[in-house]
Length: 116
Image (cartoon, rainbow, N blue to C red; front, side):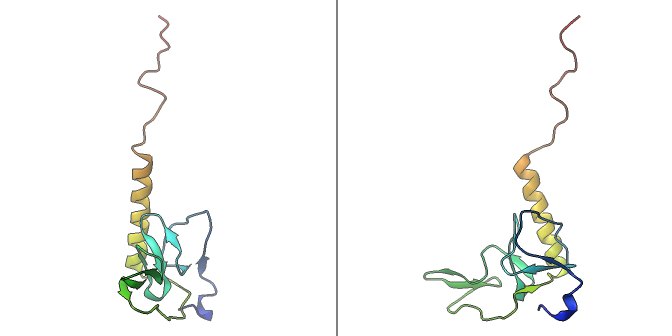
């Protein structure tokens, strides 16, 4: 829950920069981390669908479950659990590595110019 005691915490909202995911930061509801998903502030973790995402025939998604009614939690920001932060960070870094492939050094297999 977002309270006055979080005033000194790092507050993370929408933005192009993706800081390291930690349990010390406060994340807003639906904060997205590539590879981990959407942060659900009332549940202090990341999930594959946005908070209160609606799909006809399934209902509203929040905290890992589909329900017939949307969630009415008033929590709009919170700190993730240490386990959720560690998992989100690992998933983000795994996605980043697989997106860019294996890192190779240099501009080719040889430093010779072909001149003897």
